[in-house]
Image 1 (cartoon, helix red, strand yellow):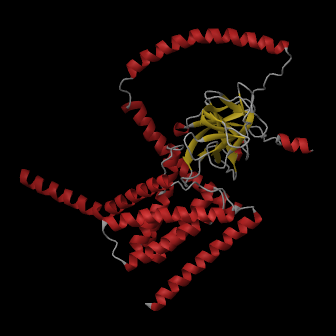
Image 2 (cartoon, chains in turn purple, yellow):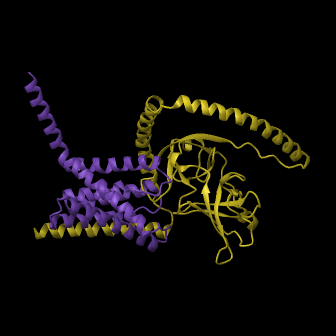
Image 3 (cartoon, one colour):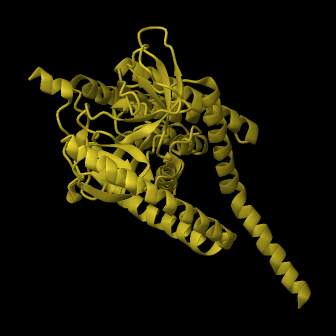
Length: 172
Length: 281
């Protein structure tokens, strides 16, 4: 079940990311769905899952993006592991702490990645704070919505089904 | 509990060390993990084909059936525009014939028709900081790395490796790692176009402070890089300021609308050696 969740989350994030960026290429607003999926998995399943999801997601993203394979893998492994450890130590089940985790994870990820790009001499992305913040907030929003859909979705559907059933009973 | 924690930390350290070795190896050899990239790209391009088909299907259904409100008025407006343009076209034809005659007289070589292949954009880059797209043509269609990619509006970018059998990756000219030899169409002042993470997303470097480059000037490819054929439109100068050093600070708005890029043409001419390389020989 957990493996299926990891594959669906990472695979879905990659497919969505490539499809969306194909449609909005050239836009200055960017969302990193792979990172969102990794933070989500780390929060939901803990440090080991977060670490492996980070490693696999980062390496695949690197391999597909072109450039040095492993830079994204390394940063996402660290993010997945640290977020997993935090989720095991603290109660991060309500919306606000999760939102904060997504924002901080995105900012730390971008800073780590820029640092590694500098060390390895590969072209660096710009670290414009306002832009980073926008990306972090969008990532956080997407992540929190993902949690809401997974956690509340089945319950909402169940409630709607029951309401329909009782409405049908009243009619007949 | 302590045992599990130790094992997890050990795992983490192992994974990190393995990836540091992977990165160091690539940085030292500068060759990259080509096999891993090629296999991942080839495999994922299949998924992207399917996704692009679904997206195009939905888009087509929406565009052909639901988004047709106001088409009649737009059609009438377009007819008027076509009539105006036909008149202008007549004038342009006359002008073109005259310049062709002049060109023959001056014994100038006419630019040869470039061999091209049309391709569809099927995906973007999974890394949002990199400006590349995937197209549905690859080595099977004669595409190689470093071939130029153009659109009706102007220059799009160049093919970068690895090139799959039926898919290839295009580095857009607005990518922060992209560059092209360029010159001002009006004054022929030469320089280099670079992608920038800014608005507008292109800047022109190495243009002397003494050169005459003004906002509104067309910037075209110079051909010196050996990748882009000469004379293709890159964009229009938006700002041109006197720089602090030797060169002007010029920002350029690309001619191509990258936000709605769907079809492109790949120039099937293998890259030529850059002008500087030829001079060195």
